[in-house]
Image (cartoon, rainbow over all chains, first blue to last red):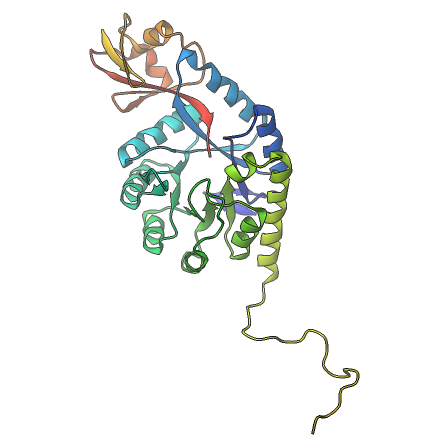
Length: 260
Length: 65
């Protein structure tokens, strides 16, 4: 089981609701992923908000827990107000906090992120901050009161996997009591497995499933990748070695004789 | 009166938030609203008076990652 702010879940895969070829495929892919938590956003809509209403009823049919995001916010002020609107709209104190610092890389702005996280925690929110693998920022988020921290693996939608594996390993070691989620940058189930093998509690992804040729099949593949990675972590991986070590017994090797 | 709704300047007849929603054809649905960066909970829509130049955000659920 994995716990987010006191709520326990079986699935360690959190999945986004965007970019699918159709609403029906979105629903099927989410079901196939086994995810119990999905991310959603909120946007301006003209014409009476009918598209938003239709999307929301599809999500409700899935009977999953909703994690709203502040995607697109570029300042702490925007993110805090968006979070409050999300709380009003979705009836949850959970918020995936994104404060973007750079449009090219969608890299989080650490200053705005910490400012917004402090304000939202003080206001009773359960903050899921999207950050980089920077240790100092992660420690500060924890010290502010974030019980979940979500470093990227690579830029959003880049499908590059764990680019800075050593730093992610260090985060896990230094934040043993925080629920750590790899958020963004995963492209393959093997990337998700690698994150779980490192001891990460969960992964959050969207594009890798939604943009696959067959999103439903890929959702299932990610579910299996996450399960394999977690099972491997629990089983205890052996450490790497510099040199070979035979697995077949040496004693009784045929045709062997003492060279001397 | 002149209002900014979702970033666009409009000329509205309504002087109360619930009346503005009706005027703009937002019916029943699922929205969250901020007036001048302050969230206005649904029970207060009918009591919120609007002023010239108010900035209003009307947001609905959307796909997100």
